[in-house]
Image (cartoon, rainbow, N blue to C red; front, top):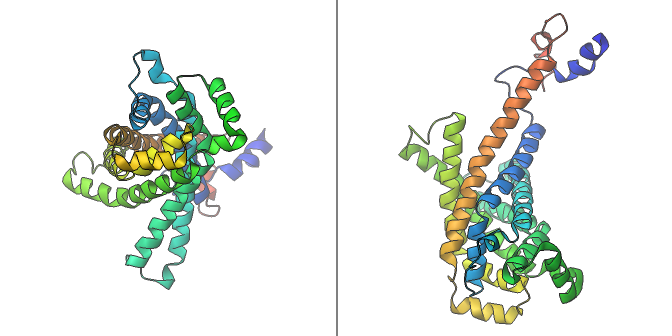
Length: 313
């Protein structure tokens, strides 16, 4: 036991309150926090998603309460995995951008343009990788069926390719929306802090979650309304509508369903960013407590008191 405490735990022990987390650990917390935040937001707002999809397809809203929960499992999987992948990839790309700053001045139009493009790439990749979940979910909503029936119906449509129906417009739409949102949420947070320093400007977990919720809601709704036209095309092609017919129909009424889309995405983004702060704070607090426990020897002498300066995390 003494070997265990002095050896393996010693490698985990150099931790003190207030120390900065390693980059890899931050990314891990961000990924899993994003996944949980996405699942939470999708589950809480799925009814709005049902309304949005049906309105974009020009169909009536459900009359049965149970129909508002069709596709909720696939919706949660899609949103959780998409948000996690997008956050991690965007953070990686933005870090790469910072390493290129010697080539151009920070704050210039070129730097802003490259940052926007990187955010678009992150959103597009996240949308592509999670497209099958979204296609199954929309098929369930449109055809009022279960997950297995939706999978069989899509497979009979045109095999594995059907699970990527509308992926082109999905990637374009998500890239645009993600670029807008990720590049505006920072300035939006700054304005909100200035507008309400007593509520949204606090540095405690509750203040950060509130700020993330409000900023995410505003930027998410704004980006969703602006990209409603390709979102309509995506929704129609995902359930088997021919591409040209979907383009013509969406172009005639580019903002059909935009109200529900904006409300839904504003709610989702607000919950996403608010819950992200909550989950990351929870992970960090739990990790700090674990490291404190690991830092104690059987004689109650803290290893970290002696090693924290020489073995940083």
